[in-house]
Image 1: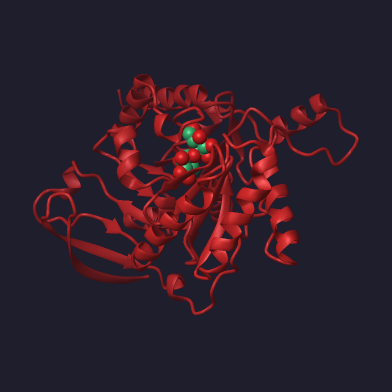
Image 2: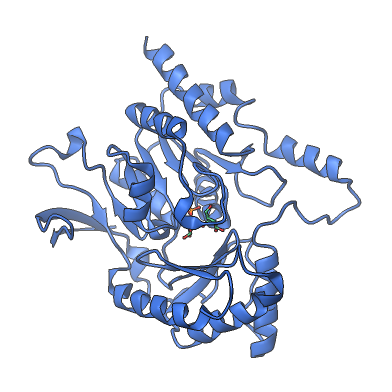
Length: 361
Ligand SMILES: O=P(O)(O)OC[C@H]1O[C@H](O[C@H]2O[C@H](CO)[C@@H](O)[C@H](O)[C@H]2O)[C@H](O)[C@@H](O)[C@@H]1O
């Protein structure tokens, strides 16, 4: 990592702020990452003819919000679910073991948004979190450093979460900002802002406009500008039109070799080819909090989507912390624990707060 002091102007207030930028060396590796995602779950869909590529994309789109893990052996659905739960037990039923493991360590909480803090809904602009969930997140953040790590644009996620004392990592971690109201940021302290893909802003804006134009004839398609990445939603597109949509997105990406495609739940995500993802954001935040090589920390990451797998993988590789997958159905994952839905996430956060309050008396 290298440290640099940069003075930047805050777009909203126009106020100059001094930022300590920590630049991971890996970001500047000369080796460009492959144009498509590496996660175990993602299919490699970049090879072959144009038609074959589009078909592969459509297959991958079908798998993008699986209701259950694909059966490989002769296990019944119930046996499959039981075996999955054995391997990924509920974080609620394992609560005592989890808090025991945290003794003497600082819990740092990482929370994905869609499908984790808010239920999945058809209209991305209406994916609101409940007040009860907001209170649970606010309380957790009083006791533990807490970050929201999301594919969404940072301003948009702030408009949903509305809590000042948190870290926000928008655009899949490509736009990280520290708490605006925190003792850490009193006079003399430097605010944290990290935007490793800033040079891609004009390109992303351009691609957003092109994608709007190219997909406007496909009913139900929605293009969302997430600042350093773009989402093309197909939740409301009839399945028979998925190939046409994939073909349009693929043709646009062909013109932008510096952008790559990943997938989430019924969404195609276009983002820069830099080596940065939610896992890197987690590592960056731990380092910023002073826990880079510490054994005294227990990072807890809760997420529901393919893009969260990058963070689960980091925790698994560090041999540290807890990855908790939010899913009602068995899924291939690098997480160790599970919760079924956002209401269970809220229960887990509340229990953590109660336990902490009780333990400090
Ligand atoms: O990293 P996340 O916080 O999980 O964000 C990933 C994407 O979430 C949003 O899309 C998803 O939620 C929508 C609302 O429930 C749903 O309609 C859509 O089908 C899901 O993919 C968000 O709109 C995307 O921009 C994010 O990339």
